[in-house]
Image: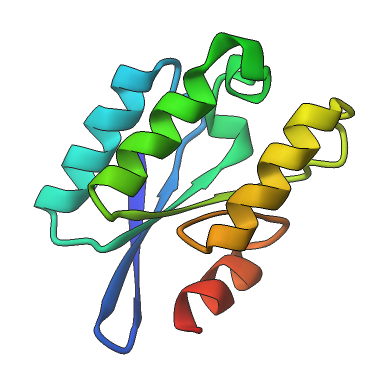
Length: 119
């Protein structure tokens, strides 16, 4: 796992990259959040490819558990990927509602993620 640092104003953003899945469970999400927080970051960018596909099946409740933890600890999270492949209406609604809160976002590109953090 690699962490690239981005800075927008006073906001420190961690872009997490890896060649493998780094979030397999809610506990992995909590561990990542703690790691990022203790390194002084305010926001996190993670790529869809680094998250277990189970996250995108809302019946597993992994997505809700992870996003709730990020919200509770006020660590902004953006997930970058192509979400058009998820045809489930409930997943599309989940992404739409998450993006409305602006605390957890699902976007297509790194540039869009950084832009959202700057607004």
